[in-house]
Length: 318
Image (cartoon, rainbow, N blue to C red; front, side, top):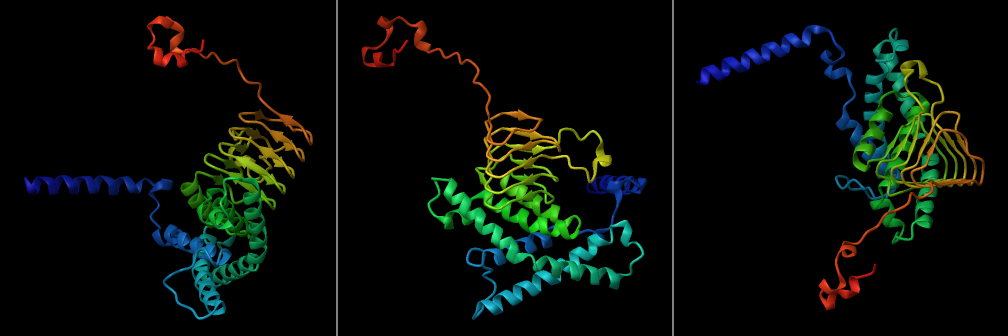
């Protein structure tokens, strides 16, 4: 019996190994030529430590001052980020002629260029915290927002990933935003441009496409899609603006869908829940869906009042 199971397992292994030899995309076995998701997750965590030094401290380190702490963390992240960038740069056709030393040098320059953007990222992130606190009466204080709010978490990851995306680092920015997506339910492509004072309330189910441009003081509720009108063109649409522009001081309520690269939501507009928009909206306009007629019937409509317990007659409200 034991030998029979071993033989069956061996047959299964052989059949799968043979299947690997069909030269499909999924058959590629290049473990050391792919970025490491766990390393990228660790880099992301340490970047949050840098953005919010009082909230995401790494307890494995002990320092006497912030200078020492920051130096060690930044050196660690630059080292690991450079290694991951080196891996993904090899996948770009334009880098095929570069040797390993040249790839690593380019990766290091990209890492350094990214870190020069950290003060800008933190400047924008501070405005997001303020917008969230001002916009949500349920917020106890700003500490609660930084520690608990999925919207701020997703926005912060996007701001970090967006700067990498702008520098030209492939794959890694998307890995970062997808980690945030899996954790929060908020899907913001790293290519999306977010203005200052961005507030995501609740957040679950929000989708923001790659070429979206969002202005300052924009508020977005759960279930909103800021997406492409059509993706049937596939790769032919790469580089084309497919997603809307949302101007300053716009509020988009739950469940709304705004689609199309030529769609512009004007300054100060309000988009009501469940609206489906595929053309531009003028500044200051409120778009709403008229409520359908609701038919509400009580179960007591079909019961004679005499049949009710006198103590329950207060329910009888036909």
